[in-house]
Image (cartoon, rainbow, N blue to C red; front, side, top):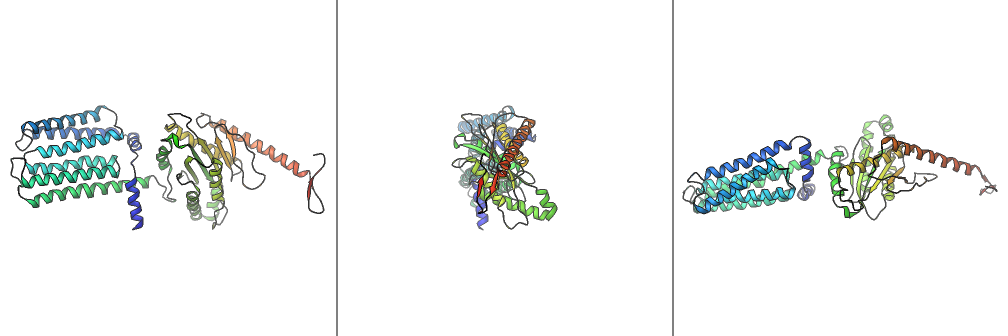
Length: 438
């Protein structure tokens, strides 16, 4: 029961990523067909309104006809808007739905046949279907509330038979209750249920089935939240790839390999900062993205590396090569562009491969204006910084050259350390001293 309530709260608080949804439809060639369908719905609404004015059961009189013409104009504008203009932004979309809801209710109030008006409230299901797909549960809840209020109002008008001249349903309280119950069933049960399960399927499509983390598609979707507000600080990405994971599978079997991946996911969840997003983007590759605030990128990356190295209850020690990158907007208003998102991930991935070249279980950090730090003499590598800019357009060959140059520097440093150690002599009492002249 607790898990069910938590899931319901998550769904209720979910804000549909409207731009991402439109982009997904467009990339799959579904947007043109959907625009045509929505525009056709506006055309049908226009025909319903105009034809009803030709019937004695429809709108009559100055007020009724004025309302009908206003609704017809709205329906025509709806049709032309979806046919001729780009897809509306989220706020405009909500405004159009609200205007359509009001127009549908007004139409049904003004018709002379009360039974026709009560049944016509079913047109609110059409706008409700649009809301179910493109907007979140809170917008749908507002639409459901409006639909139920409209059905109650029209049921009351049906029973009392006013305003209007047709006597269909006048005094029939049972019929009025049926009208309300039908709308309750469709709008308050069917539409939210459809949206909830659509949300579950969407959530599943963005998740890795083995670890429960975000997959690459899910990570791409959530990147927008980090780049949408430049005032919250720099954005970091940490890419981790398990070292020699193929050996784990070959030695202990794929079931143990799956266990290692699940344990790694759990450790990264626990070690990552609270607001960070953790994803499994490949077989044994993981990415952590978040805002850089009170801690340094060195601390974040090293904490994640150490969490993997210290995993217990496994048949072998597991380590990871870690690459990290930080990007700060520096007043750039276009820093949320998708190219910047992908550049951030690409550079953290390049830094991770550099850590691989260093032998694994190392951290390489790529930050603008960084300096090179030497690795520690023993134990895990200290974070190594490489100079570059997140927005730079370097080729893979250039990145590989930087990695090889860094490896040569480390090899030279290692040779110097060995040379110094060779000059150290061991005295009989166990104390070490450096030879004179060195």
